[in-house]
Image (cartoon, rainbow, N blue to C red; front, side):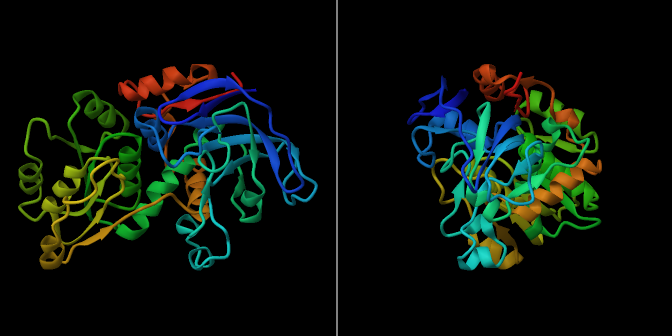
Length: 347
């Protein structure tokens, strides 16, 4: 079968590999849809020390079970499923509290297990054992259902932020994740959502997807001045740093209101210190949160929000790519001509 394999730093390529077979406690899916994550894009650009060399990349997926082990219960051949890819051990302190994404022995599809950028994928036994496999609601297109996983990561970050009716929110970064942060904030009752972005093309795209957004072109105006002007000098209740840029964290601290909340959603690929002023946290009573991956519960909640129309992801799927054109998909993301790349390996 055809698969996109990570063979060491910046060595990513399509190749023919052996099709997986189900074991007693695992299953094999035909990958109906998979999408490229920001983490995948960083690996494409810079390489990654977290991906096992020789692994098939990709972790956002929806597929149809074509083969299933004799000891797997509650699923059958023909079921269309979504997999929460960050799989905990089920035994550590964090897993027992439901925070499987923070497991001491976390294993992730596309990193520790072969991933979704392939025609077929084995769902590992651990995914079934830890209840990470979910049936996709009937009628929900696979190319939309596959976006539940990245949006679940957004939901994980927002659980800390307690966005409520009347809040003013700023999202720094206008990609798919930033746009989903804005959309979810609106769904929770945010009165206003600002979005800061440097790129004029991305500004226009974000505004097209979410007309209610109030855009701030930070290439043309000072972000702090703009935010303070728009909030009568108070600042914003919530800031979400939805980009992997250290100085954006500094910007967040400078515009957050007293008793505000900041999410450092975007992980930093290089320098990770020197961007946060602890005196701002202290004197303004600001809360600062991290966010990593998502839980099964959050995956299921977002799958349901997409299915019932609360979150409309269809506008973000401007183009789908067959697996053989995955390089074109990465290039389109890299040059920012699209916001989200969805692959349909069967095409």
